[in-house]
Image: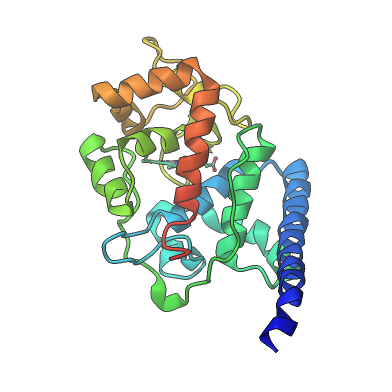
Length: 259
Ligand code: HEM
């Protein structure tokens, strides 16, 4: 009987993965349609990062589990404004109820980066949604007005290293700060709807562009010789930035998942 079943197994596997791939493709197409009419790519990247960035690698709590959609996490000061991103994604969730919120938030982010001219970030489906009880306490995301010691405390807790802190900070090539959300104001780069290496070019300038934002946490990357050298490398060679970014972002998008 086992032998009789064996030839069928590959077909079953193939059919299952086709279904999964087409759900992902369909959602990607709907995300593209959203981005064509509403250039909300930056806030989607921030939403996914704030959902995942609560991860504690020692405790194995937090991570890319969709818990950001529940209070109290949704109302944490760091998440101010992210209800806009969640509301924009809800019609897509309603259309594809089989996709978890956790997958949808992370897919919205990687698709936003690709849509904006950035790298194609490897993506896996299969994150499980957390329940309300899994909301993490406030204070797990970084403060913008603190330096490298603080960034290390926060990012090392998630399991990242200095290279990954420097690489992921480059996501500030997209979007801007809003006074009513964070108290800060303005974009980091001249074309904040394009994902490129201009974040590093701007923070390295001796004379800052008065129209652009530099947070204390951005400038902190220039404080250590190693992270500054990495900023210079990324500013000089976008392909190197994109290659490192793909790896770091996939890791961020899978914190606490697939274990
Ligand atoms: C926006 C802080 C890392 C992606 C912001 C804002 C602040 C901030 C204060 C402005 C929010 C607003 O007013 O709307 C920080 C700090 C970080 C950090 C202190 C520590 C290194 C990251 C990372 C990512 C990211 C790792 C993604 C991988 C973004 C994006 C925006 C943003 C895309 C723009 C959002 C929009 O335009 O609505 N960040 N961030 N940030 N952050 Fe970060």
